[in-house]
Length: 66
Image (cartoon, rainbow, N blue to C red; front, side, top):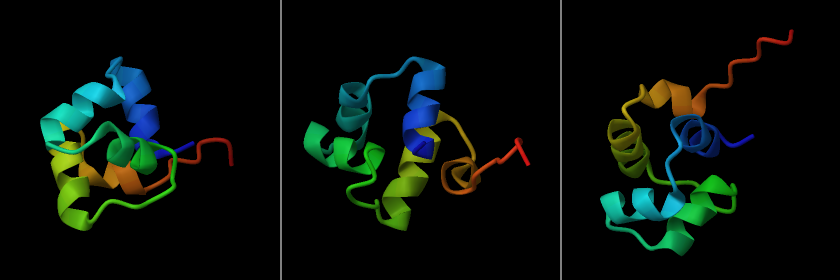
């Protein structure tokens, strides 16, 4: 699962709200969430700040199953 999508779901945040906070279109944010496009590092850092998570949480998979 996409880490941005995972954090949004955990926090009960909608993509439309995140798009508004970023000043980006819903389609752009949906592209990030659906892994159709990757945000630039600056945008990824801004997303992490808005979602109040460490940027590493958005890029590092925590594989607890193995």
